[in-house]
Image 1: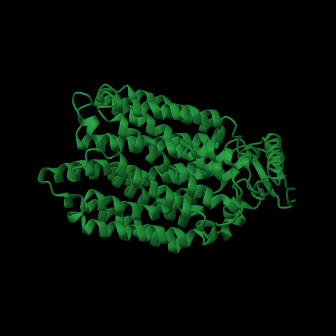
Image 2 (image 1 turned 135 degrees about the horizontal axis):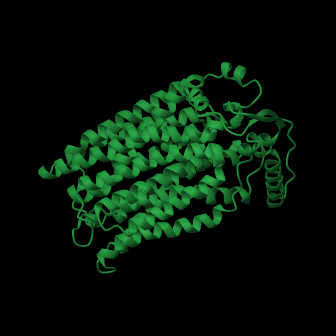
Length: 489
């Protein structure tokens, strides 16, 4: 389990969890949560720019299959980036990695803007994906370790749902940027990518003020630094709220380690918590296939089959519905509970997607978008809760890598196969002009979502209002072996 460096008893987790909501927490949300806005911006720009990228004169001469391939390559980069940066996040800390990964994203986005060939574009998209994947691991773990238990569900769901703020922004940006009467078509799509890098630099300025996770610090032998950070947070929150903070007597005893071996992390995931492993895999595969299949190719479907020339407004409306779902349904994950809400959102969105597939032959651009608005109002909240689940049901020492693992495995299964399958289906169906040729993709997505909802109903964890340490005791905590024996996995 690594070299033991000391043993301490600390009340830091309880002190962080009992804090009232304050302006300081908004700083954490803005500084860290904006990664999803960047991801939404990236995915939407690519989805909106299929025609611009296909043009051999002003674009890169890509086909629908190439567009799908670019989506798959981006997701593959995100999967590998999550795994690579995820284990570094658990080893070297949350803050170092959420600064590094944002830098990787910004650099690669600039490279994308300067793409001269499809191969260059593919390579730049892969590195961009690596940065975003690393962000998911570093950010989800940091947010959950800094946000009080009472608010963790709604904050996580809403922040993950902010992907769609970026999606809406990206959709609206492409309207003037892809209008040849406003800007030269050769430069419009390049400027869209460059704007993502500018936004990332703005986020970096805010993020510098977010502290390292005190939970990570005290486990890795830096309890003095952790104590200083928590004391400073308490003073800030007390000043901002004008309230005296509650006293807490709850403590946890930790055997400190500088490093946690990957073998122990693997044992934790597959041996100590096998049911939670199956649960997270199911949730991630379902939402990844649904989103990456439908949304990566949504713009292409509108232009190829439904005669839409400018997809920006359609995508913006679709994105607004997704964010509204996460924002409005988010509090219910704390009030009604994780299990009921995740089951409900997954099963309902899966059923509605299947129904849409049945009537695909008679849809218009308006009706397809309307169904998408309804489906993803619910699916957005459920998909966001998948990240919440993975980040709160495993021990602290493994949190970032567990998020990375399930994101990578689930997304590889659903997010790489989805764009590739839909790109192939669109190319094949466009030859005959029959939109029903892509219905099989809808049915697969529906089955995966409904299946994941059923798994949640049986294996879900009632985590609402619980401290992270009570949901999964740290591996370095005293009596962790006996605790593991009574966990319901």
